Amino acid sequence: MKKIDTLLAEYGESHQTTFNKIVHYFCVPAIFFSLIGLLSLIPTGEVLEYFVPQAMASYAHVGSLVIILGLFYYLRLSFPLFTGMLLFSTLVLKGIHLLEMLNYAPIWVIMTSIFVLAWIAQFIGHNHEGKKPSFLKDIQFLMIGPAWTFSHLFKALGVKY
Image 1 (cartoon, rainbow, N blue to C red):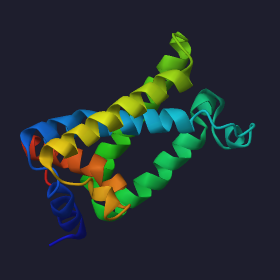
Image 2: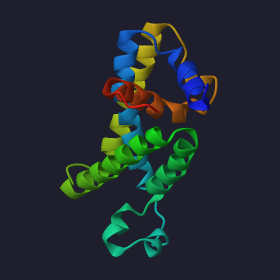
Image 3: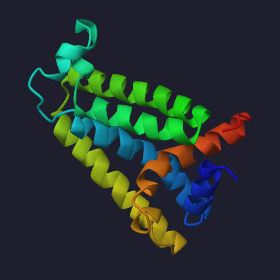
């Protein structure tokens, strides 16, 4: 069995009920989005902007660095899951940029609200399931959550990972 299969199976052990699965299908991407949004607010001066073309300067932030490091992790586990996370991460970065451009509310308020509400929902899902979140056993499962979500989408689409 491939390492990704083992990790996904172990993660799935605490995500068996339909309610908890649905909560995670929505909340895992929301937490990822909000976390990258919060990380995008960490000031880096103009250090990162020197390494990217001017058109991409607004994406040169700590959130993007975290995505790049995460993508190396996913690439090591599964190329299809890496590809899914690359596409999703691109949408996340575009979404954050769009929210910044709309200037509806401070980004930190929006992202903190999403982050807190999504984690509350996740803990409600785990309480319903009667099992602790996987990351309490192994911190690596914080990275497996998005892959687990994509694995279900890939199965529905008939994509092997």
